[in-house]
Length: 350
Image 1 (cartoon, rainbow, N blue to C red):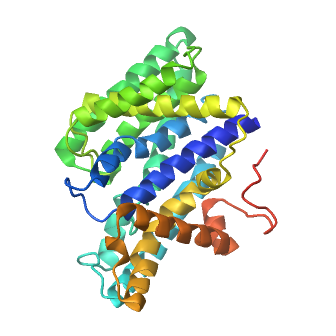
Image 2: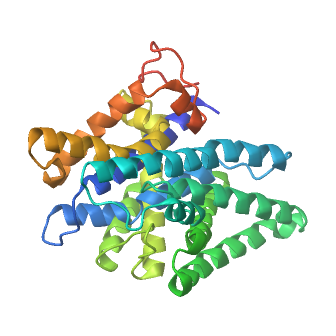
């Protein structure tokens, strides 16, 4: 894979994960707070962005399905179990020791139930579970697609994924987030949209990307007061889908143009967050639940009630320390085998 593509993908992941951190750093969902409008815009696309990006990198021509499945178990399910279940349970115990509100009915039964349901014990771990299931579904669909006529493969896949997206929405209304099945079906639709975006021969003019980005934001505010993929709260579902797609395509298109023009602005810090997005996803909530609460007790002040931007800066700064200081065996649970300390974040993998 060439460097430009890695740059813009990492850049987009950096935007996505810092959007997640900002959202979680904000204490509450107060409509009177100016930050609410930023939050509504962020939640309209920030989680489906990751599924879209995964689709961009997906290769439908699979020779060894077993090897692919094992690879995803290592990179997604193992960290889900280690961080979402084991470490998440330790975090819950620490929260109780610190006197902060914890999970009601916490115990072995609740740990097993939440882990099996795809929630884990740490907010955000559901993403790993869902993305793994999306990959398994895509492997299955690619296998089925091989059995159909080459002439109709594209049409069959588009119809199937649109049906999954619609079915996931109505299933969510009927059964909620049972085993994250509605999330998986809807996410698979955005995953395939990403695949189409990367593999279609459609030529989009450069001036169209900013227009799509702006129109996607406008549509977001036409929707209901809040949007949350994690909570299956979409407002007017077709508007949510269209708004998210327009915003994501516009944002990705502008990012591609930025790096293709070889801009002097390399955004090393943003790409660093992007390359470590899974670590940030799984650890920033732990920082908020444990480290921040400990600081609050020591400083006799409530950091989590700071203005949204201040809380975001504090958590983001702490996250950099976590990434740099995290032991190698913990990074290895994310499929990462870090190089020496000389490997500064300014360097980009070729």
